[in-house]
Amino acid sequence: MNYEETLKYIHSLGNFRLSATLCRMEKVCEMLGNPQEKFKSIHIAGTNGKGSVAVMTADILKESGLKTGLYISPFVVNFRERIEINREFISEEDLVKYSQKVIKTNVELNEFEFITAVCFLYFRDKKVDVAVVETGLGGRLDATNIIKNPLVSVITKIGLDHTAVLGETIEQITNEKCGIIKTNSVVTVPNQDKTALSVIRNKTEKLVVPKMPETVKSDSFGNEFLYDNQKYSLSLLGEHQIYNAVTAIETVKNSGFLVDVKTVKTALSKTVFPARLEVVSKNPVTVIDGAHNPDGAKALSKYLSSSGEKITAIIAMMQDKNCEEFLKTVLPFCENCIVTEIENPRCMSASDLSKIAEKYCQNTEKEANLSTAIKRAKATDLPIFIVGSLYLASEARKYYI
Image 1 (cartoon, rainbow, N blue to C red):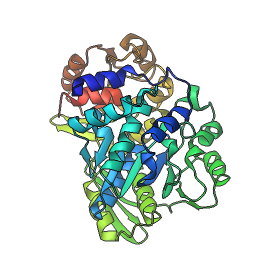
Image 2: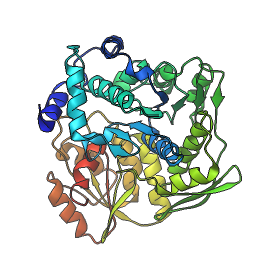
Image 3: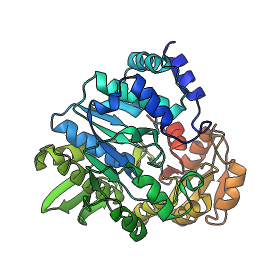
Image 4: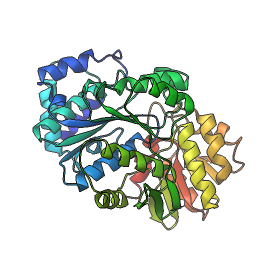
């Protein structure tokens, strides 16, 4: 198989056709020599911020001179961005090569299990010093949870998302996320709901809760904050990223690697992460953000509130998300809302989503074609924010980058 054929095969596996269990991952990894046990790892779960924490943590470790693996999901632009070493994507050739190794085990896997097995094998063969591994969904039964001895387990902000799979309450969801906590690993937990924090405290005696940072500046140029009597600059936008940054700082501090403050500052000032309040155009100002759940909506609305500007929003959302709560939170800061859709079986139709949006933004229109929606937004002469789904972010980004 070539690269395109390999991608087609991986996507054909689907993510929900097989029962949730670790048995298949245990079997395939055993046949591959348990590659996940051959490198040190940091394991990250959570509802919001886990991707940002993973990227910042990896950047700090890389800046310190360590050969650092990074496994994140979903991808935004290129499938290969899910597996990186020192922030370089796995090559097309290696993705094909390692996929073939997993296929030859003849173990039936879903898509996320398959790519996780590929990742672990790749990291082992490339001899990474440490890998930062983000869960896909949940924690307890997540394919990545065959990692048995992480240096640090991280649980980022817990919120209501994927409730059909993880549970309908914060307590139930937190219990699922806590499945990544292992006996000997330090657990870093930032900025949590009281209920979630209480559940986590009952799961570990090695809990590290970062102190509250002091925001010096948070605007469209980035963030500056004080933490432990040190001033940091952060390239990622949105005040919520400050809390993700201090989580990354504490994660590295408790990993056992000796990393000096100067290195941490340099890494955070350079971190780039697509579709997280990402400015993709300055004329007109256009921002892409993958926020798609209530907590993500709150972070986005806080940013919009602090800017004081009215904007034009382009929005598409998946049917299984809490669309009402998201729109209710974000749209009061929007002068105009253009509801669109993308080619994804989970995507809500522009017609159905616009019926909800109209309740919270008077100037709401629907345009199923994303390209046309962007043209209409430009005609409003206001800053444009493209939000509601990472899948939308991925599609929209192609028009700018």
